[in-house]
Image: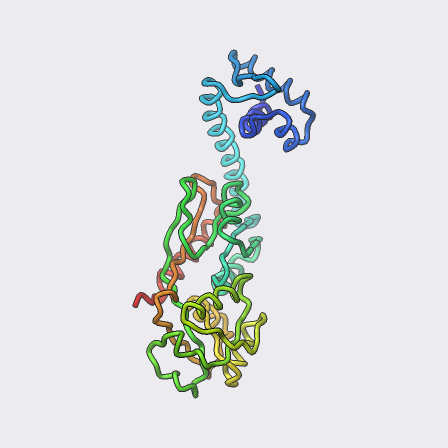
Length: 303
């Protein structure tokens, strides 16, 4: 019995089809069939129920065997990963995903300064994309705006974020403790494309507030957007976490102020989600802890 046979068995069980499994494994169907037949001989029991038309399904023994095969393959994968981690952070690779408008550039910046040999890949994804990547192991963890209800995933709430309006110091609302979005209906707006869905989220909020915004600029670049606000060209609606991150990165302008929106729809829960039981490298765990620590010490708008 070989590890390759166990892997083949897992894929065949996944599809309940030699044809589809062979396509994923990039081997011929006949070679795959021979491998599974040999595995059944080694085990001493048939693992699949063969049906007419070439259809197959796991029998009772096959279901029992699959459970242990998955445990064996996961243990092997984790052991190899652990051995690779003996070299420490010198070869650390991290893959993470973020929902739109989640800003952790400040955390990533300091992390890479502290650990310059780590390789980090950070991508913007929808919740559906995150679930797929977490389950197939292509990302270590993800930061998203709402809990993902899935038994294979673990959600850890980090903080309650609130949208804020960024205005110049000379703006009539600059001294306010909070403001309703509807009060800003006559303003000119600037949208920073922090994520692929930032504009639609902003438009949805304005719709809930009962107006269609007048947008004078939509584009990338926190520094440019901040300068436009500072000069009174328009105002910005951004999450508090983004305002904080921009400030810590040194992009924030001295002549602007952030005011929280008091609308209920301007609040969102932010958290980290990981796959249950997935091995996490030393580098990934360190970044995970940095993110959790950062947000646990920041101001939270709960009112």
